[in-house]
Length: 200
Image 1 (tube, rainbow, N blue to C red):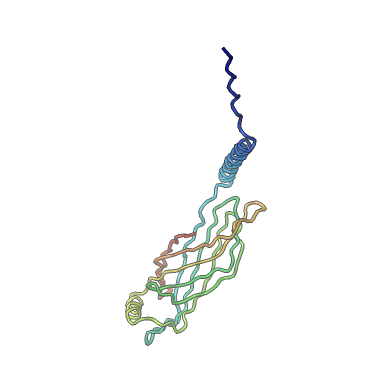
Image 2 (tube, helix red, strand yellow):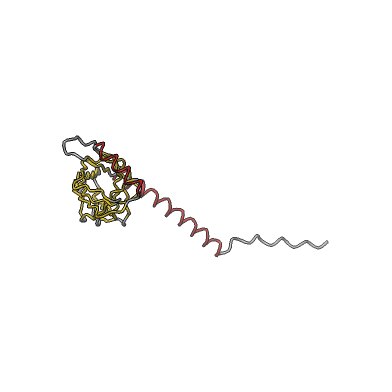
């Protein structure tokens, strides 16, 4: 009886599949190394949230007539950078004052650099020039004026960049909302500082 031929040897993986596996392993290794680098950097830098508040707010030359407002708002904004390894570069800063959702005054502050572990106080003067209001808003504003203070919303917007060591990171848009800010009609009254919320 004739001997049957031995089965052919199993085909090994093709060079193409080996190359694919090597590429996958290299990509996974790079992802793991990048994650470790980010984690180590974060642990070294220990970034902390920037802190903002309104330390003072007052109004002058207030004149509300025929549902049109003229007034000058003076704000003292406190910007605190608590980070020991991160400084902040601010582009021009947009500051606005709103009443019941309607913007009534606006100004732009100069750009500046805030060093590490620094508190910077920004003086902002915003002028409402013949700002048109609805009849309802005008009535509410008159009532608040008679009470001695006006509850306003202060909004701040700026493009910023963080600097870590010698590296400047990409721009971020910083949006800050401070509400309510009790603007005093009389300088004799004590102002209650207003905290602010951040939105990136």
